[in-house]
Every structure is written in C-alpha cells, then in structure tokens.
Length: 313
Image (cartoon, rainbow, N blue to C red; front, side, top):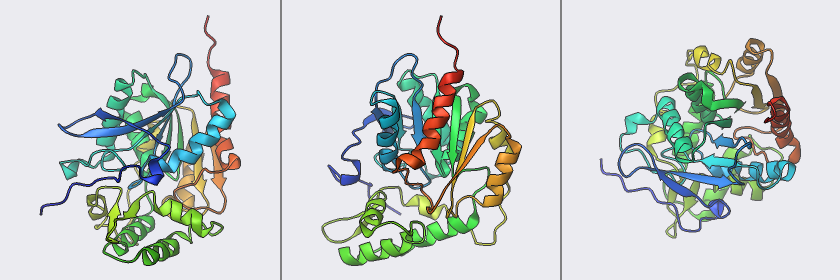
C-alpha cells in the first residue's frame, strides 16, 4: 500500500534548540540526523545518546543541558536519531528496522565524524543498539549507560506501547488529543504537570492544521509490535549483554518502567558486579533526565572514567 512520505514541520518546537546535520548513511537517499553539542576535540570522549524505540533525540535535550552545567558547554555530546525516528529518513526496506542494522548505521555516523568511539547512553531500544554495537565493534564502546534497557524487553510494555500508539491514530480536536495523551502518560509521570506531559507528547506526535495526528517516527514501527502479547515469554539475549563485558557500565532503571522488569535489572547487576546501579524514582520510560539529581549518576560515572584514563605523556 502506498504511504505518504513522513515529514517534520519546519521549526518544530521540540527540535528548536537541536540543529542537526544530515549524514548520508546506508541505502540511497537515506540520511541520519545528528546533533553535536560542544566541541569535538582530542582528549574529550564524546557522549553518544540513542533514544528509545519510536523516540528521538529530543528526549536528551534536558540531559545535555544539565550535563553541560557540570562539565562545561564545550564537552561533546552527540545526539542521533536512528532511521525512522525524528528527522532521520525512514527505511525504504522496512525489514531492516533491526537493532543490529541500527548499530551498523551508528558506526557509519561515528566514521563520518572522525570518531573512534565514545561513551554511549542508550534508553530502552537505544540501549539494545548499544549492546549490538558492542557485539560487533567492542572497541567503539569506551563505556556504556543502559537506561531501562537490557537483554530482554518486558512484553507488557511493548503491548501497552502498541495499544497507546494505535489509540492516537485518527483525527481529533487539539483538546481531545492533549487529553488522551495526558491520560496515557500520567501513570508514568504521576508528579508531572500537564504542561510537562504536553512537552513529552510533542516529542513523538503533532497535529496538523486540520487536526490530523502525525507521528515523528515511521508508523511501520507500530506494525512491528503487533505480534506481542502480555503473556509472551521472550528469550533473554544475554550474549549481547555480555558483549559489554570489557566496557565500564552504569545500569539505570526508572521506578515505574514497563520496559525492563526489576528482576532482569537485578540479574544484570548480579552478572556485572563491577557495574554501578541507580533507580530514578517516580518516573517511567523514557526517563526525563531533566534535573541535576537524575543526571548526576551519569555525570559521576563519566567523572570516574576520566580519572581512570592514562594521562598523556
């Protein structure tokens, strides 16, 4: 069936402070949107941030600002929209929406930026891409932060995500659209104001002038979730997690997430006794990372990494 080309409105508010360069990656006419904050330079290991399944770099805008308050505005932070998300191109071959292929795309982005790796911060599906990257190119992953990400996703979260996204489809008034999104997001952010819930919603959806709902991701990503049911038992991919065995690791989980079961998170910590663990209270996925307190575990992790690095002669 013919599908209309996905577009992002010019000057869209969620991306106003996130200018991007578009890099040709993979198939012809496909590009990836990359935002570089700070200055790429020798001796400064960049943070490379990958968002969740249908999400985009806007989820890291507050994180970047808070991190720069600690390390200075010139510390390099790279935000990447995976294919089919945000301002990157949709894949022409929908069968290629796979974490392993997304990881290979990230390798090309690093090469285009003349980088030999970085400290990766992956939320949800973005963390699975980091694990896939470590499996094929372990030297590129100098360290990793996995947030609500592990070797197996919770099927309850996948089903809820699919159902919520389907419920949003169709035409409605702006007031109805906002009210529906607020109801969907409120269980994940019980302390959030309606204004903040609207900000989170605007990172993945918008209404056009005719009050039609549009996604900031390829709608085919919803179709890929159709096979999951609440009681599915998914096979953990522990070899992918083990691929991070030589990389310093920070494991984070939001208290209310439905993406990563607590027992999986605890098993990840058990298998990596050297890893640090942290739980963000009162939030679900994606983590907002909009306060210094929630960003500090990542800042502290990076601070320790820098102290371990050998000094140049």
